[in-house]
Length: 234
Image 1 (cartoon, rainbow, N blue to C red):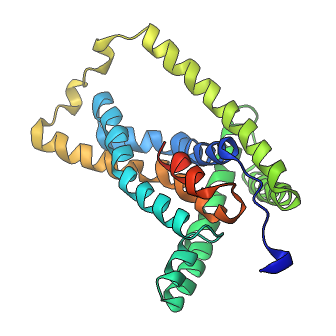
Image 2 (image 1 turned 90 degrees about the horizontal axis):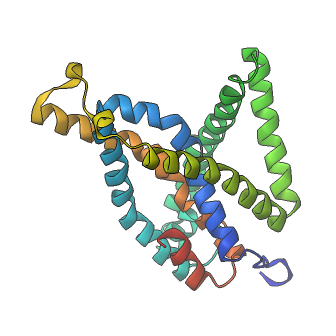
């Protein structure tokens, strides 16, 4: 690409923060209730998240291999194009833009507004404008500077990890096994429990979708051959 070649400015910690930040995001905050509802019991809810995470590992291994083989921006578009199918690459790019990225951004922005609603009442119409404003603000931030966007993402990730760490620590300190006992109204037998677990695992899929987002910026990551596998799998 000559003089327009992208500069590799993102190091491992910035990339890891982006991967963690996009995973520990709206998926966790929004889907926990749905997973708990589908699983039916606390133990099955926890198990659903564990199994859901294990299921994602092979996918991340594939992305790690592809991103090191083709260290360019574009993710699925680049991989399909190099596989020899430009039409599929085109369709993948447009499907991602219209059917995946846009709805995901909308859900995340609306989730922020929804959580703000717990602090102060927000008119539904005003909330939509706030959500749109947030999307535009974050877009401008990342357009201005890759490094600035990475630094902001690192701060946001730390801000999200700290509360989770505190809650987990408090939960371990005051752990009581009886709190994980299934209510009598949800005692549905082995077959029902298995189906509930499958439903819970399915509901966790939204929680792990952000991990591969760093593949879209592989062309701006330092030493992608080592950084990408560590960030995606490690």
